[in-house]
Image 1 (cartoon, helix red, strand yellow):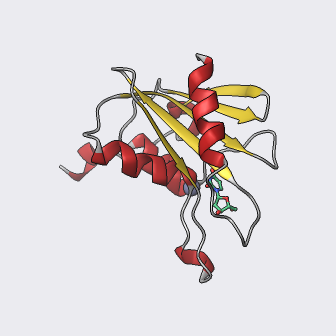
Image 2 (spheres, rainbow, N blue to C red):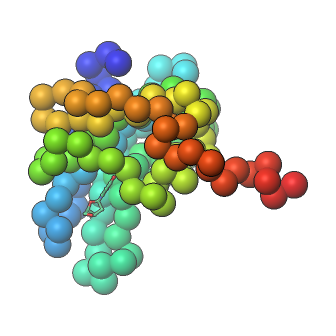
Image 3 (cartoon, rainbow, N blue to C red):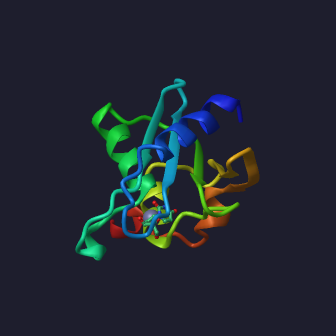
Length: 130
Ligand SMILES: O=c1ccn([C@H]2C[C@H](O)[C@@H](CO)O2)c(=O)[nH]1
Ligand SMILES: [Zn+2]
């Protein structure tokens, strides 16, 4: 991964609205044409109504026209490896291939690289609805 995706995720994390958990998270997605979309987690006083950094990033990506996602970086200030939650894995899988790489980062850079297929094996997929 080039450094810019990590830096984008880190910059996004700085914009997190996480007054309740105090657990800021940042995510950055890269599309095959090189665009980067970022997001941070957004919390709500009614706790279940908040949403994750990955979901914010997907919203930006969709509103910009989508495209194929090639790489994803996720970072959280307070843990060395922030692994996307189950809901976000399903949302990310909607727009990724099994070989899409996910970079789990800490404040210094990438700690571990995994693929979408490893993150969400046996994913429920849209073609199952046919
Ligand atoms: O991959 C993750 C995991 C957690 N969170 C957020 C949700 C909540 O605001 C906070 C604590 O769970 O972290 C994310 O944004 N992404
Ligand atoms: Zn999530």
